[in-house]
Image (cartoon, rainbow, N blue to C red; front, side, top):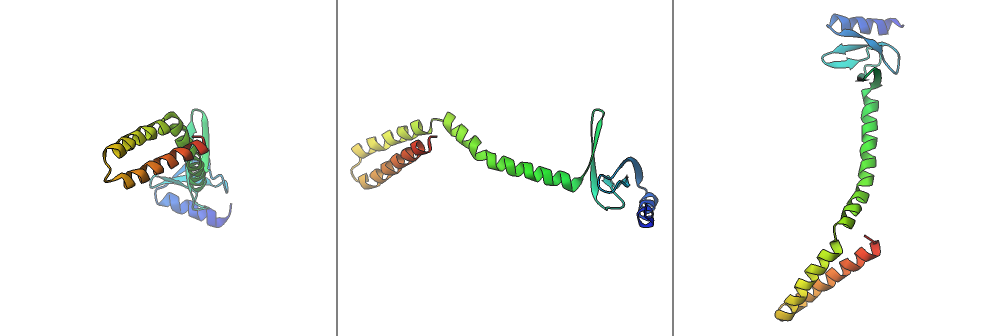
Length: 136
């Protein structure tokens, strides 16, 4: 080990850090627990130690954060598919037809606002047509 790495490790010990039995995945220096964080004295990077039964995984925290961010991106891309599945279960077209019936009845009873009601009806019909085109 280089003198600088050793002196950095000794400095952490003098500050009250505890040397751990695990090593940095990047430079193989012993890891230290200091102020509630596991750090490498050489890389100056925070490390996470995950124990799962007998298996222990030592990873740089920035690698873990990067992986979590990538998983989040994948989840965001997959979300629209989930929303489409929900829309398939939810009878959107049927509900729009119910609303359409209400406006058609309103058209028959209220001649004063017929123009506006017709615009609404046309809009609903257009939405229903788009739903069918998208095959939702």
